[in-house]
Length: 96
Image 1: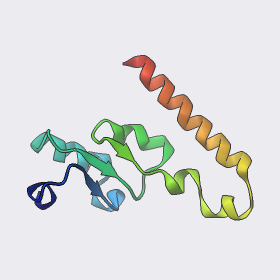
Image 2: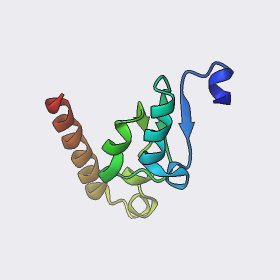
Image 3: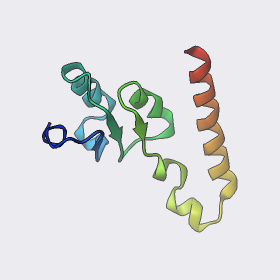
Image 4: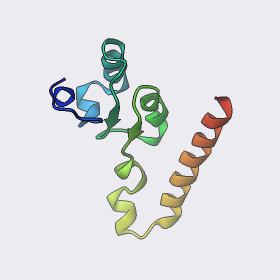
């Protein structure tokens, strides 16, 4: 609320998993439907779309670029994760 009072266009909720996840964002949007939110910290590819119901963007840095995968140069797994995300996004667009 304070960020909005100071004129923020977007409010980042971090770490969202600690705050209550997408259910927390749902409750925030019920009381403040004008809220434009970004979720970060504990968002996974599997639940990213639950978050996108209530916010404009999600950070998937660790979900896509997990440090052990990067250290091992496991770009195949990183690419597969990105493909899954892209497929889900495409399916989401088709439904709308």
